[in-house]
Length: 329
Image: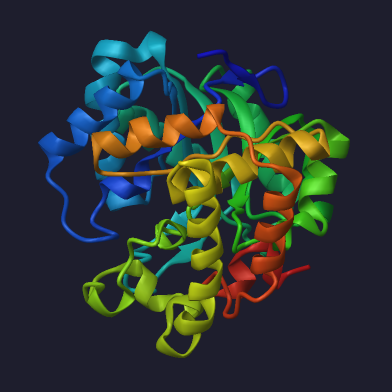
């Protein structure tokens, strides 16, 4: 599997793996099964692994450490700082001050059992701290050899430009998918202009675009229950985009997940922007399925149909719109 060049010279696999799926945020998960899933991803050629210090209150980093112990040289490792608390219960706060960043990176390095992090993201924007100060603190970690590249998650185009002027940014990670396209207005063009790669999280709409999510059956602790577009009064309308994805999947003899991922990759190609989605899953078969998207090609008509279907989506993509770029632009 040929590597994809993001920004600042960072090369990663053309499809990544989102580690949040292997935490209790979507319900209970067996640690042994989770580790097998990670090993299968790397065996299949997915070397770009994404986690964060808040996933499972650090347990996700500790899980990935078990894989890194055996296969560190095979992996491009990304983790994040900045969210403090428990997102499942809505008790999260954000920190981007230099003192917190210095403590956070040392804690992540210890949990991960590694000497260096390949890509270190600011997970969310702390509006109390100028982004220049946050990025300056991150850049100091590069000089110290603790991290190799800087990333930013859910920043606006202006914030990205200000940060990039301080230190090269390798990647922006924000939600982007067929039903979450707000980043295309400003953030995506800014990334393309600055030579910054884009790493879409939730590229399958937190599973919704696959047509396999029964929102009425979501567990009480499932994070999606707090997202407005999953609410009862929005879900019937939003099912229309799922139907369009399913129809095109049938035309191509592909799966809905493959169509959703192929759409993102082709969007990046059309915009001159390196795009590396990071779908997460608990099942090894889904990893193989997702990789199949790399060989899928949508026609212009199919892309247009998916674009049009997205226009009818209702409900915010975040439980707190100000925590994502959409709410601050």
